[in-house]
Image 1 (cartoon, rainbow, N blue to C red):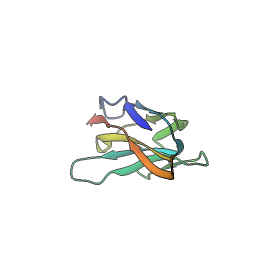
Image 2: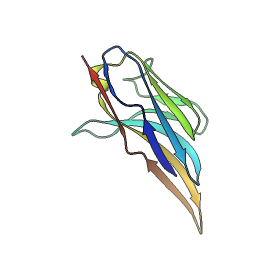
Image 3: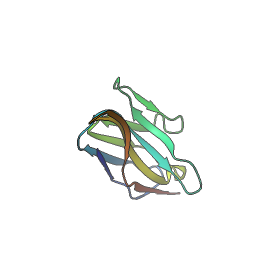
Image 4: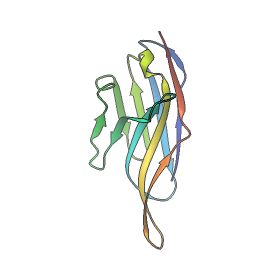
Length: 118
């Protein structure tokens, strides 16, 4: 599975932005999610579609961000952006690949930069 994100750019505080994520290739994707990372900090979960199709959000983005779509194409709608949302946003796909044995793997995109000015 290969993952590609797009849509990041510079915006002003209070504006909205939508990120896109496509997952292609062979594998049974069980969940997809968005993470973000700033220099010197660990990558943190933003939102994730679970195998049950519900969406879990971090407390910092709940009520402002909405994740939609499916495990092959999904979107992260970000409203009322704040300077603290500035980060590199990564899409992740967790999947199983069956060859000689079943492999449980994670695919990450290259990241897309979201910068929010105050």
